[in-house]
Structure formats: C-alpha cells, structure tokens
Amino acid sequence: MPVVRSLLPALVLLSVAVPAFAQSPILAATLQESALPVAPQGAKYLGPGSCAAAACHGGIQARDATKVLQNEYSTWIVQDRHARAYNVLLQPTARRMAQILNIGAPEKSQKCLVCHALAVPDAQIGRPFDLSEGVSCESCHGPSSLWLGPHVEATARHADMVKLGLVDNKDLIVRAEKCLTCHLGAPGMQVDHAMLAAGHPDLTFELDSFSSIEPPHWVERAPDQKQPIADPLFGVRIWSVGQAVQLRESMLRLARDVRGPVWPEYTEMDCYACHHSLTKPEDSWRQAAGYSGRRPGNPPYNMARYVVFRHFAKSVDPSAAAELDRDLSEVYALASDLQPDRARLASAADTAARAASMLEGEVRSAAYDAARTSALMSAIAGDADAISFSGERSAEQATMALDSLYIAETKQSAPQPAVRSAIDGLYKMLENPSAYNAPAFAAQMHRVRDALGSS
Ligand code: HEC
Ligand code: HEC
Ligand code: HEC
Ligand code: HEC
Image (cartoon, rainbow, N blue to C red):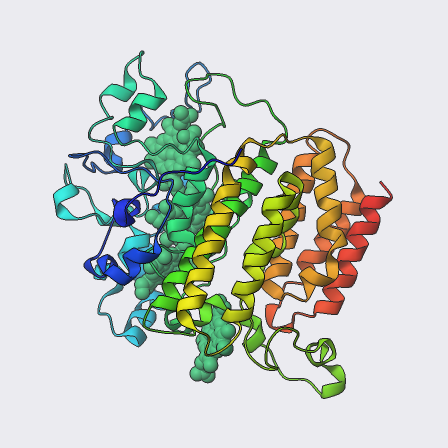
C-alpha cells in the first residue's frame, strides 16, 4: 500500500536555515510534503567540534566492536568534500561569481552559505562554532543539543533520538530528501540559471553514486542493529528510493519556479538544447528527429529525473506508474511552452509531486532480487531511443543507473566484461556534453542491451 505521509506545514523542512525571503506565501504554497522532521522546540546546533573527540567520532581507525565506526569525524575532515564546502567560497571562481551576481563577499552571503556551511539562525546556535567548518555533522544529522547526551547511553534507542531532533537518515526517503535540499534545492536554497551563468556548477545527483563518492563514513545498519544490512542489493534500493524522492522534489521545485519571479527558468530545461554548437542541416540529429510535442526550437523541459525511474515505477506499481506517465506528459507539454498558463503548470507539477510521493513508500519496501534488477537493466537499455532523445541529462541518468545496477548485481554474481565495457562506452559518450549525439548514444545503449541479452 502507498504510504501517504502527513502534510507538513511549509517551513519545517528548513529548520536548518531559512532566510526571510523563503517565507513568502507564494513559495510556502508550493511545498506540500516533506519527510524531513521538524526539529523539536529548543533544539540547538553545537557544531562539529562536539563530535570530534577520539572516544566519540574522532578515532583514526574504524572499530568493529561498537554499533558505529567511531572514526566518522576523521573520514569527514580528511576525505569528504563537505568539510571544504565553505573554503570553496574563498576561491577565485566563487569570488567572480559573487561579483557577477553583485552579492558582496560570497562567504558572507546567505545566498551561498545556506548550502555551503552550517548557517543557522543565531537563535538556534547553542555553542559558538565556525562557519568555515563547512557542511558538517548537524547539516545532515540535525541539531544535536537535545540528543548529544542521551545518544551515548547504552539504552539509547534510535527512535527516541529521532524524537529529540536526530534526522532519521536510516529512512532512505528522509536521507534522499536531506541530500536534495542542497543537491537539487529547496525553498530559499536555490542555484538558478543566473548562478550557473556566473560560474556555479550545475546540480546533478543520484543517491547511490553520490553516497559512494562522499565516501560513506557509515556501514548500512537497521536502527539499533549491530549487524550490517546483509542484502547485496541494498544499493538498488538506495538508487530507486533516491529516484522517487528526486522526482517528487524536482516537481516541487518546478512548481516553485513557475510561481516565482523568473519564468522560463532555464535550469528546468534541457541545458544542451541551448548549449550546443550548430551543424549543417544534413548533420543535425535534432532536425532529423523533429521537435515532437513542442514548437520547433523551444527549449524542452528536462525529463531526466523521470525517463529512467519510470521503468522502475512500472515494475513496482503499474497503475500508479500509468498515472505518473499522464501527469508527466502534461508537465512536459506545458513546461516546454514558453508562455504556458503558469497556474495550470504549477498545479500539474504539484499533482505529479503527489503521485511521485505516493510511490515512494512502495519503492522503499519493494522486494529487491536479482531477477528484478536484471529485468530493470534490460528495460532501461531497451528503451534506448526514448531515453537518448530526451537529451544529454537523461542519458547521464541512464548511465549512472545502469552502472549502479550492474555493480549491485555483480556483488552476487560473476562479472560480465561485455556489459561492463558497454556501460563504460556510455560514459565516454558523455565526456563532452555540448557535443552530445542522441542517435550515437542510442546505438551504444543497444550494445548494452545486446550484452545483457547474451549473458
Ligand atoms: C542549493 C544549494 C547551493 C547554493 C545556494 C549554492 N551552492 Fe555552490 N554548490 C552546491 C553543491 C551541491 C555543489 C557541488 C556540486 C557537485 O559537485 O555536484 C556546489 C559547488 C560549488 C562550487 C564548486 C566547488 C568545487 O569544488 O569546485 C563553487 C565554487 C560554489 N558552489 C560556489 C557557490 C557560491 C559562490 C554560491 C552563492 C552565490 C553558491 N555556491 C550557492 C550547492 C549550492
Ligand atoms: C552529507 C551528510 C552527512 C554529513 C555531513 C555527516 N553525516 Fe553522518 N551519516 C550520514 C548518512 C546518510 C548516514 C547513514 C544513515 C545512518 O546510518 O544514520 C550517516 C551515518 C552516520 C553514523 C552511523 C549511525 C548509525 O547509527 O549507524 C554516525 C555515527 C555518523 N554518521 C556521524 C557523523 C559525524 C560525527 C559527522 C561529522 C563529523 C557526520 N556524521 C557528518 C550523512 C552525513
Ligand atoms: C547543507 C547542504 C548539503 C547537504 C545536506 C548535502 N550536501 Fe553534498 N555537497 C554540498 C556542497 C556545498 C558540496 C560542494 C562541496 C565542494 O565542492 O567542496 C557538496 C558535495 C558533495 C559531493 C562531492 C561531489 C563531487 O562532485 O565530487 C558528494 C558526493 C555529495 N555532496 C554527496 C552528498 C550526499 C550523499 C548527501 C546526503 C547524504 C549530501 N551530499 C548532502 C552540500 C550538501
Ligand atoms: C533556453 C536556453 C538555455 C537553457 C535551457 C540553458 N541555458 Fe545556459 N545560457 C543561455 C544563454 C542565452 C546564456 C548567456 C550566453 C551569453 O551571454 O553569451 C547562458 C549562459 C550559461 C553559462 C555561461 C556561459 C559560459 O560560456 O560560461 C553556463 C555555464 C550555462 N548557461 C549553463 C547552463 C546549464 C548547466 C543549463 C541547464 C541546467 C543551462 N545553462 C540551460 C541559455 C540557456
């Protein structure tokens, strides 16, 4: 059964950092569902120094006698880019960005700090800490003042800590949403096209791959369990829940953008529909394909967060997936029109967000096995044309998905060199996104499909 979560009031999501402009009624109207907890009254931030002691989370070596590794701080400070998220604001690219945007010093601007540091309102600071510590423990785990003491007790239960303000990152829906506040955006936390044009990297995200890159300072365990989760396909679960949440959040972002001051907001469109070089008519794959569903030359809405996930949705709940298909077609048609009925588009995006959110619970609890994983890989690779012609960003998502699924699958079965090399071929075709070629990418996808079929 789908899990319908409560409709939380708009701003709970931002107990972390809510600049005043995020509280406009227009923005508030768009945020409907959030899995993120409301921090309890009085919960305050104490900074990463509170976790750093060697007997706490600052050990050098991972321990295996305890429920957690206890070297989390060391992993974060040495290997995790989040620890340097504030420092990048001091670099020349950030300076130039701030100059172009006319926002003063980037390391002092809330426009940047909301995602690059633990920048919380003064009233929520329990003990002084330094912004320069970047994206730190409480940016992901929530304000610790109420649970810091209790969580080290032998009797501490995860669910009780969550009541005291610990973010329940063991719930993959919550975890994905937490990452996406910064990696996709949330009210008051936005990377818009003006920021991209000024030099900010584009935001792309996929929960499973990004968790491996971070790198993880944890072992996946169920609440209160010492034993790691044994499921070799847990990566598939992480991938699919991440996709479902990302779809919901991208619909909510679209609704915010449509209701905002700038529309069309180009970050919602396929970047490389605009950012590619012109060719002779006889060499143009775009002209050969025609411009189905939109006026020729209009930038299309970026469907990357849907075209791959829809195959998974279909395997989990065909009727919910059919509904999502209808909702997304409506969103695509309206958003790919330069002057759509904005109220209609915003409400279509809200509807799609609700449909995606209904599926999240099912995706989280779906049964994952080798057969489903391999059927899913075949379905994605077999949908080569539709995915490839949805643009470079969709091709990227398909590549990351096939890679994640392949890695998960071969954790319990023999490696398949032909599949591996065909997927590597996909990555090669994305090296220069402005030169992306849909028919060539589709042909490589067919090679993946054939390699899968012959294994
Ligand atoms: C919505 C959250 C968000 C906001 C707001 C934001 N950033 Fe970022 N920024 C990110 C994320 C996430 C990344 C990492 C992107 C990736 O690699 O996938 C990043 C990366 C960067 C990088 C590249 C860092 C590197 O290691 O190369 C720079 C520079 C940067 N941001 C500067 C800024 C500046 C300056 C501002 C304010 C004008 C700003 N950011 C606002 C989320 C944000
Ligand atoms: C970018 C987000 C992020 C940051 C920053 C972060 N964590 Fe985590 N942490 C996670 C996620 C996701 C998990 C896995 C979910 C879980 O086990 O709770 C996790 C797991 C853990 C665990 C294991 C919990 C358990 O019950 O198994 C500990 C302990 C931990 N983190 C401590 C820290 C400390 C200390 C810091 C700061 C030095 C930190 N984390 C910074 C996201 C983050
Ligand atoms: C408070 C905002 C915030 C949250 C929450 C957050 N991130 Fe990030 N993340 C950033 C910023 C900012 C950067 C860029 C840092 C830099 O370049 O130094 C970044 C960088 C990264 C990178 C490095 C990307 C690259 O191109 O190498 C990975 C991987 C990553 N984040 C994964 C995650 C995951 C997984 C989660 C959730 C468990 C998460 N992040 C939660 C803000 C955040
Ligand atoms: C509707 C067309 C359109 C779309 C879609 C679009 N852009 Fe742009 N972009 C532009 C225009 C126009 C400029 C300004 C170019 C100029 O002034 O020369 C620009 C400028 C830029 C620049 C600075 C140009 C440079 O040479 O450094 C970057 C980077 C950029 N866009 C990235 C993106 C990304 C990433 C996306 C997708 C998330 C995107 N754009 C989507 C039209 C678009």
